[in-house]
Image 1 (spheres, rainbow, N blue to C red):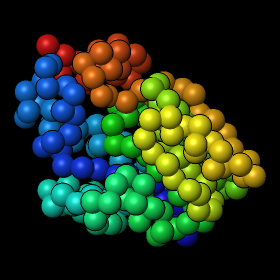
Image 2 (image 1 turned 45 degrees about the vertical axis):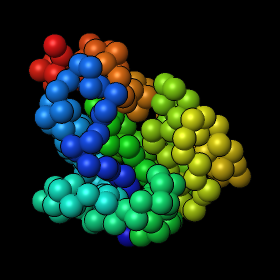
Image 3 (image 1 turned 30 degrees about the vertical axis):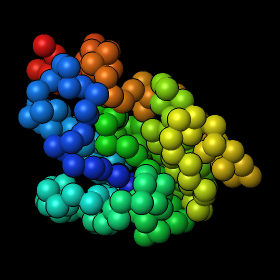
Image 4 (image 1 turned 60 degrees about the horizontal axis):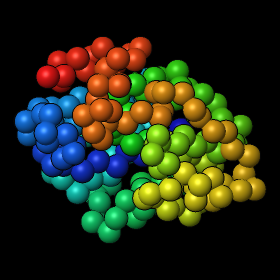
Length: 195
């Protein structure tokens, strides 16, 4: 079975609330959808089977149009949502968050290669969270502030590679994130969202 990319997504309409001062609600929804499309394309280029975990019917239709397997998010939190997706292939999975605007297919190919060699992968967010996490076995998830160190500890005993490039480190949460991402290589597509 091909490894799976588990992408947890909430409603595009309520995503990116911290960008409210910089973007109107409809612009935030368009940005959230476009960034998720970018992440899906990068994962697909690397040969991952796509699993979208969501509780939103609009996102579920969007995922179905992209030939992703849809897992229902029961609203029990991010850890439970990701676990539900991982359960479809616990021997080869990566959780990738849908707000990584610079993610590249090449990076996801490296992730796939590491999983094939039975190595875990992890990419820290700039704020100490976890943007990418993958393994060939179940691990205890602990998303939230400081999750990178919890997840690194959860991978103990499993050779792990830490990904440090901007394409896995930069997510869009704030207007400053959006400006920074748009200025980096591969971020030009974000320029229409800058005011």
